[in-house]
Image (tube, rainbow, N blue to C red; front, side, top):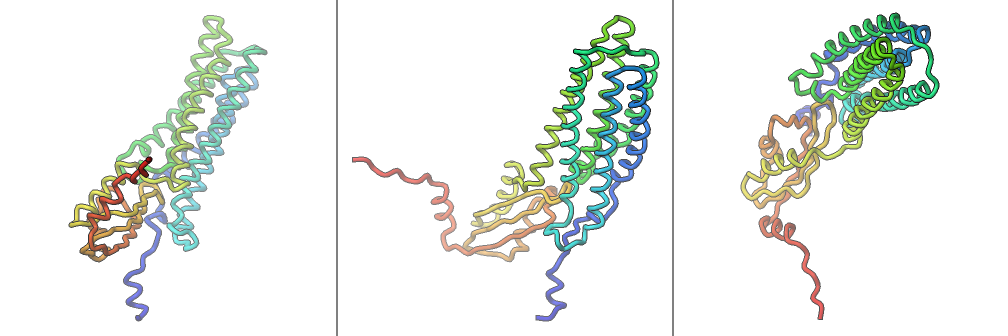
Length: 320
């Protein structure tokens, strides 16, 4: 067989991962805004004695690091998209970036909670007016970052909806906005009602909410990194599509994510009237974005009997 004939059956595993994503440019903008505001809040928190403000600044510092990781993940994925050492391309670097960001979220949640409890036990004086002014500016910056990333995060593009790296960045800036809002509420309560304990208490509340976001993102990204099977509803749709053709039965089925919004499928079809693999690939639902399809076909004389035997529970031995 000539090389030209073999090339007709070959394909790459880039799946569009070599293209620059809109979320990448937005992430760079947010990194610059977050880093600048982080310096202001940390310095102000130390100078004015506000735990809520300091926690917000430290929170933003961690998020600046996490956002940088997200930016590097985009860059790595794009540059290694054609690297044949990756079986299905470098798309999972996106999920790895999101997983790393989730771990950082968890670490910061613990730090925020620990420092807040210490401030509850050992209160310090707070310069309310200055702290409130800085926190309001911080909230404005965080709100701008949420809008910048949120427009893309909430978009209708299928691949962007599954961009775990972008989701990680979005949750980080959303957490920043939340801690800024809680800090303002706590500082106002302390200034006008003398409830100084509200300042560190809001740090605890923010830590709990951030921890919950972290757990959700860890579960989602870990499922991608560990090649977790697609949801039962997706498996059933694929199985029904393949078995709708004549007497075909699906004997083995694996569907898993290989990149944002893209899945791979390996299926074994058993039938008494086998067709070429391309025939069964055309039966697959197009909206599932099954980018890499491997279908193997096996001939069986009585596929219905085989299917019934597989579905029948094993007989129990009789007891005399």
